[in-house]
Length: 276
Image: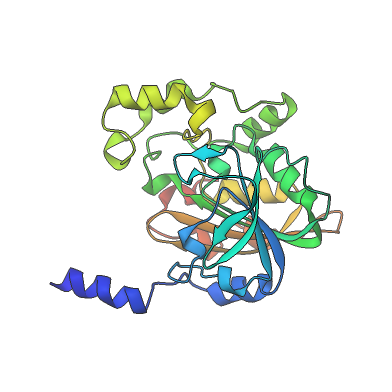
């Protein structure tokens, strides 16, 4: 009975992430691109209800048919909330049809972990937002997901992938995924055989989490790429929300978030954040 009441209550009063109004005011009335959307997190009932505040939003998906969106087509077919934007069909790591500095911001919700070369993806996303533009990322924290048994990816590993120009057909982490993936936490697979099948067909379905993130890794990535870190939030049970700004300075000042004593790393539900 209490659970039903909670569900009913949340239909009218959805849970919001802390400081969500700052994120909304920063991107309000701006034009942007979303990679891999649309996302329920940004809807009117989501924990970061930003869609209704935007000037325009286009979308980019890697294929005309995905397990998340189903069948989609290019043109004015990107549906976000009750609005429409341009749907682009392109791999998010190479946005050839998008001009440099074309957008004010970029959104990405639970997509960066699906890229084999995330630094290359972020570099491309940085290219298409204008000077002082923003990138808003939502990433699953490994501690509370089916990746919790896997080791956290290191920045050094990501840098090597970038230098080696790793492509989306990379299979480096498949063995680790199959061995350490917690199937009990993944509704998309029922047993080890279905996990193997999905994993080895990743180039077509893009379900694999090539890399495993915690909050500290995201901070190191942002600093390495010279983004200014505007804010970091967490939302239960496993979301890391980070707002980045394209910096015109030769070296962005992220000292606040590079301090391991920052309260953002002290949450008991994310013990790996305490490891630097």
